[in-house]
Image (cartoon, rainbow, N blue to C red):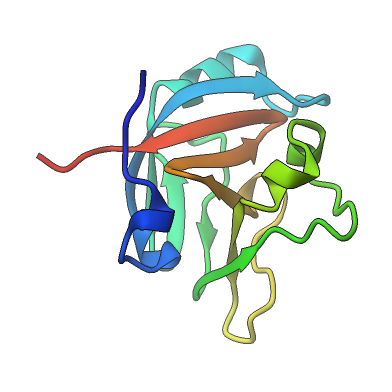
Length: 143
């Protein structure tokens, strides 16, 4: 069983909470795979490093880096289907509890696309679609 910090109980802002290192706890398929199964398995074994103005997958040079100005946090909008693969995994009641974290430019517009775009926080699990796979990340605890 995995235990961690529940962001809803934390005094940290969501954008500062996601900063740091994350390790993958599982992944699943969502349809079209841009990356091979071997690449997906490699992502499962690496660290996702999230900074205030960028994030990267350590030792996965096949994933493009994303640089941006900051994060925009918002509740998941369940009023319409937005085309995220996560909509096929969770019901609207669960989606309504998700926090959507989007990298934005200085005007507040989406600055990264495809596997470099939106993250979702579900409790203390960070969900990210990358290369056709949905990855579930848990924050690495500082020693």
